[in-house]
Image (cartoon, rainbow, N blue to C red; front, side, top):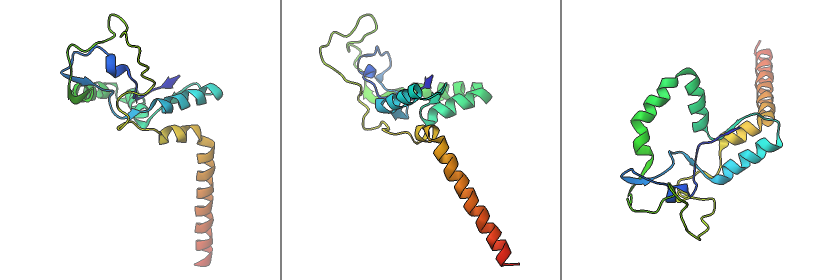
Length: 155
């Protein structure tokens, strides 16, 4: 299972919208390549689950301890955060009742490239736990040896 954050996909171009402004994914927004890398990683490794993006980790973990807090926060911020500042066209074509008949290939990216993250430090850290453990163990060793030498020299 790959738990996803908001993704910059073309769905926001043709989704049925009854909000006053154009729709958007709730920030922070990630590029589809970040998601593709996470799916590829989990398919090639023995992992049951992978969270993508720190916002996903915070939302899922916080919900375990404070389930009402996320609902309250989204109730206060969710309406505005799902809209851009641009006024929506109420007559725009949408795919609610039928596919948008359009020959254009939209690709994988939506219209939020300028705001979408192309990397996730959280995913990198989660997929390189062995390396991080080795670095941390080395750092603790160096600090411990330094403290031992310092105490021996100043006695």
